Image 1 (cartoon, rainbow, N blue to C red):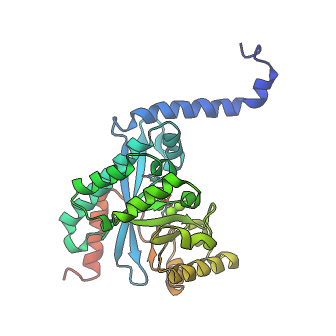
Image 2 (image 1 turned 30 degrees about the vertical axis):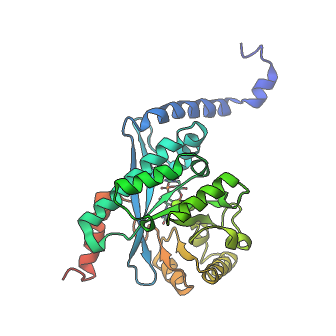
Length: 286
Ligand code: C2E
Ligand code: MG
Ligand code: MG
Ligand code: MG
């Protein structure tokens, strides 16, 4: 059978590629059941203010615990969910989980709770007709004010896409904050920052990583922070892995930080404990 289709087939699909393709088909089938099987969960990574390290928010990050493969990275399954039409359901799950986690933390922690929760939206989600309603529902279910939700979007913003643009305008008009994620990668550029409807910029961790190794990256981060300040945009450094990076970002005027040095993404109960332990250490509860 394979032979009859001719040699070209072997050129297009070498064995490695074939197993990759069937691999992703298998993964796609598993993904269809993952939500119903409760294999998806959401973890939360805190954001802190610089230079004082006060709690400034938390970012919701989805996790898939596959019964056989173990943890599958969102970097691998989000694009798959987008291409097979599952992203709306998955996105709605994350939104609702995140808003409920936010509500729970307000209840348990009171004034020590994170002031906002950030949720990532991929480009395909921004093209879903039901997105704005899903956001409104999630907020209402959790008794949240729009300003307590931050939506993180990537350079897809910069694309000439009328549908995405109008969705972003709708979300903004509702009072939700938008944050430009992964700044420094892709096609995001300083030149068009002023055209984007965002409230803050997250400097990608690949830049933060190179802060003390590459003069070019340090200068670019400095320039980004200066342009953001001029445009009155908030600034967040992601991927802070050392105290030196935190101090350097603070010295350059970056407003917030997120990264393993502060805390890894944690299940909601563990983040509650982390916040409580910190509050005790810093004497808030004396
Ligand atoms: P992102 O939004 O830029 O999230 C930051 C990623 O960096 C997360 O990876 C986080 O765990 C990781 N990270 C944070 N601090 C550090 C650090 O100090 N060092 C290192 N090495 N990594 C750090 P994660 O959770 O694997 O997510 C990867 C990407 O997948 C996210 O990048 C986001 O683009 C996407 N993603 C995750 N959850 C969702 C979701 O619910 N919806 C959508 N649409 N995309 C999501
Ligand atoms: Mg993000
Ligand atoms: Mg990011
Ligand atoms: Mg990133």
